[in-house]
Length: 101
Image (cartoon, rainbow, N blue to C red; front, top):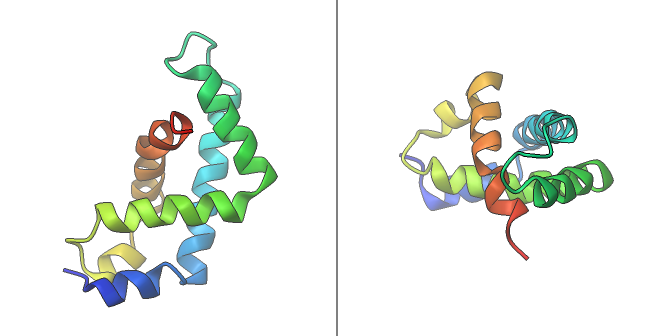
């Protein structure tokens, strides 16, 4: 289990942030091409646009949620998660961000 101090250090890990930013970009592109019948589509499109406008800012927000959600994992497990695992986590958190004011 990662200590809170470890989680805070991971919030500033450039490699991990870069991977989260990339995963947000992949999610944003998928949303840009999704059906307009998708639940929360309009809100999701706004979130996707924010990813393309300010990727690092959105990535930092997403990283905070992902670290909190994985607080029971070790630092090594968090840092070495596969791209697929990271993408699934980002995809799963999109609606949280998209539907918040």
